[in-house]
Every structure is written in structure tokens, then in C-alpha cells.
Image (tube, rainbow, N blue to C red; front, side, top):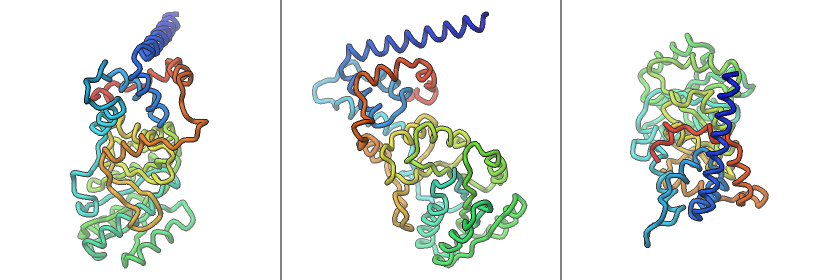
Length: 316
């Protein structure tokens, strides 16, 4: 009975909190406009509410509008690698991980080509762990032949460690891994296989996926333990905001983005303001655009607001 009472209490608090927030939006047009725009471009209700509640009550003359203010806040909270040397300059051992079809092999080839252009193919090592997908070895080997770099295959942790010892003299070693669904039982096995002390993991996220899927992938692949993330397929993403939303809330570093199949031309490093401005440009069809009635429906669902992570959003 006590558990049921606690649940009822929590439900009442959530509903009253949502009602109070919606009433506040009705009294403050700037917050209402900000909320509608951010939801429209694809940011989560948890992050949108945090931003809206942090918006100053009024703006002085000459100050930026609410969207300019939001863009500045989002840019400050989006961590990118723009002030550090690019991966191809840093060197090291990197394993690209992620779900099936996100573009890990192509991204590996893009980074490899950028590195070989600067330092020569002799300083590059390539390893593939993708033993599950038919043709996976051939795809990376085709890129390897173009670059003049042999591609080694590791089937287990022991063979991977042997290959890393063999390639210890290389300035950069890139490891292309098997693509698996985030809920596949083999995902944890692969992550354990990549627990070598000198190895750093890079999570490749498909920016064109739904926000809930990106969130699930980041958690399942332990994004917080990675060197950073690569946002792939941003050219296919109608809304970039869901990917940035996950990156901001989990405080992940964006190492680069990809926007096509060309190697290495479609590998870029973008600044935080550039990514945020791209996310705020909505190209969604009319059926997916928010109006005031839609906003009330979204925030009336209290449990959605309970997903807010105060620790991750506290920087606003």
C-alpha cells in the first residue's frame, strides 16, 4: 500500500509540475516560442523544458532573441574536438564501434585515408573484427588496397592483442568492428574484447535515426567510456537535433561528422555553433511540425519529463 501511495504521489507531482509549466508558457510568449521551435526541430522534452525554464524573463533591447540565446547555450554545452589536433594528427589505436549499418567501415576508411595523406601508408595499421557480416573483410580490404595498407583479421581477444603487438610501431592503428544491434548479447562480449589498455573506442552514431534509438545505442555501447563519437549520415538526417540532444545530455565529445560515401572528402570536423545552427534549421514536412496544442499534449505526459537528467543539464 505504501508503494502505491508513493506512486500516486509521484504521479500527482508530475501532473501539477506539467500544468504549472504549461501555464507559465501561456504567460510568457518568448518561452512558448522557444519551446515550440525546439520541439519542432527534434530536441527532447526533457532538454527543452530545462532550456525554457532557464530563459531570462525578459530581454533587454539589443539583446539576442530567444532562439539566439538558446543557440548560444546549446553551443556552450556541446563538446567538440575542434580545438584539439584531428585524429589523423594525434595517432594512436582506435576501434570504431556501433550498431549495424551506421557506417563504421566507411568512416574507418575516411580516417585512414586522411592519415595516409599526411603521414604515409607505412605508418598505418588496419584491423578488422567483423567476422559476422558476409563481405565485411572484402570491403575494408578494398580500401586497404587503394591505400597500400594490408588489412589484418582478428577473431578473438588473443589474436587482437597479438596483432596490436605486431603493429606497435605504427603511428596509427584503426580497428573496424562488427556491427551489432545495441541489444544483441554479443555487444557486451565485443566491448570486453576491446578492453586493451592502449585501445581507445570511438562510437559511430547514425544521426538520421530516431532520438530514442540514438539514446538506446549510446547507453548500450557505453558511450561515456569512449574517446568520443562520430555522427554519421548527417546528409540523410532530416533532424540533427535528436543526435545532438543525446550528445549534450551525456556530455559526449563529437570528434567528427560524415556526410556521404566519398573517401576521404566526406569526413569533417565541425564546430559546436555550426552543428547547433544546422540542427535549428528544420526541414520537416508540415505533418511533423508542432503547434501549441501539440505542445500541451507532449508536456501533459508527466513521465516523459521525469526522464530529465539534472546532473547532465545543470550547465544551462
